Amino acid sequence: MKKIIYIFLITILFSSFIFCDEASQLKEITAAVDELHEFTNYLIDFEITIMKGDEPTDKMSGLCLFKSFNENILVIKSPEKEKGKAVLQKDALYYIYFPSIKKTQPVNASSKLFGDVNSSDVLKPPFKENYTSEYVGEKDNIVTVQFNATTEKVPYKKQIVYFNNKTKEITYIEYYSKSDKLLKTAYYQKYEQFSDGKKHLVEIKIVSVLGQSTFLKFLKHKKMNFSNNYFTPSGLNIAAESF
Image (cartoon, rainbow, N blue to C red; front, top):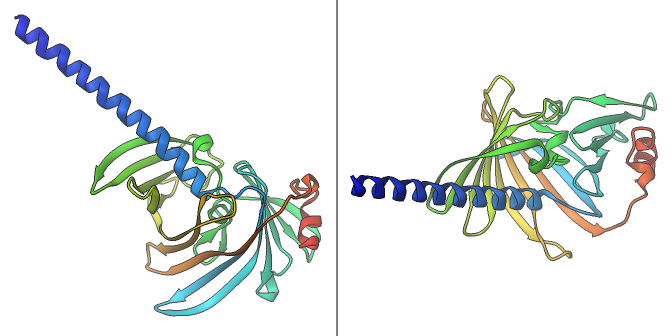
């Protein structure tokens, strides 16, 4: 009887240890995933390219005004028909400015920006504040974590992240709709160390369920402090016209 109780207690202690280890790992991975997406006080050129096979078919370019994790702006420079449009991210809320009618209005975070890239793929809301994490498993240094949305404001019901625990980099992310269908997969292809000493994502290949590929690249970048006046719906037009 004593032996059975002893085995039972050892099993409980071992299970508790595993649970604590997983919880600690989830916290660490969530912080790392957020940090790889975070650009604080940076002006960065971005480029989105739609591919057909190995050939580019269409392209969008512009600037990102990264102020913090919760307040960021993108301004479109080309193509000509999209030039001057701007998108503001405030936490998990998004607004778009139309220069043709000089009007800013709310926009759904899941609405397409270009190709299979959403505004929220460029100006990404933090995982920590909008998702809970769930440990799925680990194989060959790749930890699989499922992030489940805690708010309807974010564009994806869940994101499954494949994280390289050795290099501390995201390998790829699967995005799921509110109806739990796989929408697309983002392959994280290139990282770069910026002047802040941190490693940042600079190139993603997004593949839709239909097989279409769209590349998102962050190019030339420089440190810059921005006016707080830009980061409001009423000030978005000023940012669009200033940059």
